[in-house]
Amino acid sequence: MAIAMIMSTVLFGATRANAAELSENVITSAELSSKTIRPYQTVELKMGFALPNNVANEGDTSTIRLPEGFAFYTAHEFDVTSPQGDVIAHAKIDKQAGTLTLTYTKYVEQHSDITGSIRAAFVLSSNDQQQGTREIILDVNGKKVHVGSIEVKPSEGDNPNELFAKYGYQIRESKQDMMFVLRVNGRSDDLQQVRVTDQLGSAGLEYDRSSFEVLKGNWGLNARGEYELQNVENVTDQIKPQFSADGRGFSMDLGDLPGKGVRVRYKAKVKYAPQHNEQFYNTAKMTAQKGKEPGAKAYVVWQSASGEANGYNYAIKVAKTNEDGSKPLAGAEFSVVRNRSGEQVGTIVTGEDGTGSITGLLRDDYTITETKAPEGYEVTNQSLSVTADDFDASTMTATLCVTNKLKPEEPKPEEPQPEQPKPEQPKPEQPKPEQPKPEQPKSPEPKKPAQQPKQKGTPLASTGSSVLIIVGVAVVLVAAGATTMILMNKRRTK
Image (cartoon, rainbow, N blue to C red; front, side):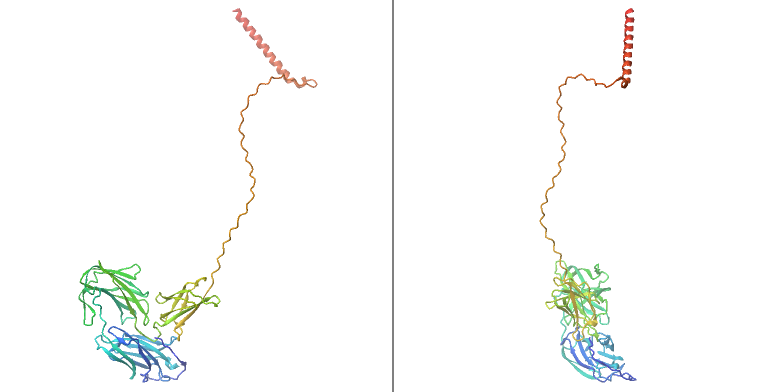
């Protein structure tokens, strides 16, 4: 739990030769998270402390002891630290003895006015204790510290009409493991074709596949009204879980259960070091032929002891404005993811004053991403970070200031202008092919005798070749005529 440190730095002389148990009572206040306690229930003890100046030295111890009948929930070791991360003391819990011992470091010799607080969970040391009111008185180095009274109540018992249930618990001696249990057919109905499905809820959980155990038998209620499985048969080798593709769920076919009950038990591991009061959950459902489909959800709140502020009591606040910071902006939305587990733990929405917040956080590292911008503004693209050191020690709040830019104005579409009529250009006429006209027969004209061209000068000189041709033709005709006459005379003489 948080150690709120108030100190002024002072250097002291040499340390004592031998470490010792402080005789002073260092516990200044103590309170309980509940006024009642039942079997298996944890109650948180919160203690404020202050170290006397110039008294404590390196190696000195303070021992806090619970009253008889109560025990610390886990055997645990942790460091009590300052907000700057300096180790002030090493703490060790002995579960059986019911003690928490602080061993101081050199820090207590170099600082003064040291104050802080520690939280640790405790339970009943036996589940069969006498009921009634008990006083919680701590023994601190032999000094008595009255915390208050607590009422020891009986177990609430289980529902005798139960058909299906799921529960989980932290494995005390483990730093990261928890156990989940499915209880099937507590009221011993006649069930056919029974099937159970299971789904991890918290992002930081994973199945330990080697840890599955399936037992079959008859459920009965003990003296405290709690179910116990009797006539047990181990059927782990016969009934196997079928895991989903992403490995975050499984189904299991249990077959017919005529008045029989089944207990499925498995471990789940946290993939990182869980913090005090961190909550984990998963869900399950049972189906049967012609029956109801009851579902169940199991929660496990991790209990340890710590000298840091690790409860669900921190907040992240976002202040949203325009770019120059003059106008608060409403309607912005942010997702908040815890870096350690990768799980989204919530959403921040800004109101009219431009602010929004998320509470109930662990002191850890977170990533904040804007998922929706205020109307008319652009979404901030970068992711914002909050570290464990960013939380204010007094307000337990980390504040972020985020600005947004206005969206650029959309260009307005141009209004269509009416078109001006264009003068039509005369189109050139295409030449049409002429149709052939039938020719009319012409009446023959009487030939006129050709007129001889008038010759100027002597024509013989220019027509010598024509005269020779005519003379040649005449000679041929005369010869042909003579030949014809000779032939005719010969025929007559025969």
